[in-house]
Image (cartoon, rainbow, N blue to C red):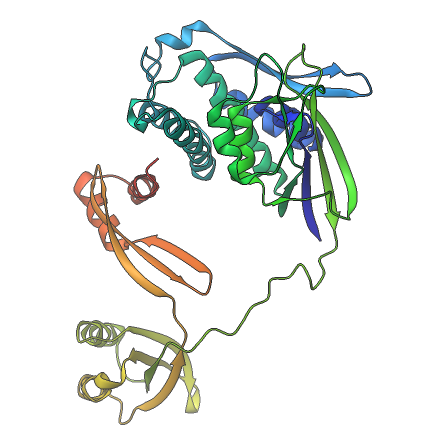
Length: 397
């Protein structure tokens, strides 16, 4: 069963519209969790509450956000707010690493569009404090709601732009809309904001008509009490068919390795550990042990060494020399692997290498444990702190 969200942007799109509409899709428990999370994230703003606003044919929901001018006395909110200070502030928010990464990515889209259309270097773009703080609240709210709702796919209609008014779309908004279908309105009102378009840019996977599916819930989001336009969000469920399943092809065999195995029933764990370390030092790809039972119910250990073909003779000799076994078994195995490389990342605690593996449409990354451990020991900090800093620096957030 697929969970889908469809966003009707025929009246434009703004951060507050999205929050109001997505909020109405939530269950009562999800609504409570959302309000707790966003109020905890922004204690310096005066109360953030959902307000139901009557519209001509229905009611709509929106968040009333009142930002106190006291925020200007807090760190990060001086007269010249740059993207760097915004990013630093986002990284202090008490939300998950994934949410912080999403907020920074959306703000990066906005920053790049302003830089390109105004021909200003990104580091020289300055943001108004109160408006920026409110924009961060709106983006955070949308990221939290998408995280709570956990849709498999997010659809949207073309975005309506209103020309012939006193506030036509600004160039940076049109830059963000470059890859999004739009429709032009000359009489019907429509509201579009930069953060609303950036959020669509980041989250929406399909711009096409409402898919055939069962409607579970719907909601309308309004930009402000004075606005006569609103955005509609619909939560749908669809049975997953073969058409929805990704078509996978058998990856090509990358190379061949050899497994060297032997059974050991009269060696101490320390002796087996010594042999394992020795094999790794001499070029083995991996060495591991498995608990087994041998004849006469004797508990024993199976030693397995993985290596490339040229090392078979050398490593087999080491196993026969340093263990009590009288013979070994060889298994030639075809192997499918991702292509991997190590990339050094500079952090405030030192250099940490990330292992990045790619192939077959898959990408994985992981900081090297030895680097994490070295930095943790050097600075007397938990490994988790070093790991989080490593990911933050890797994603430049």
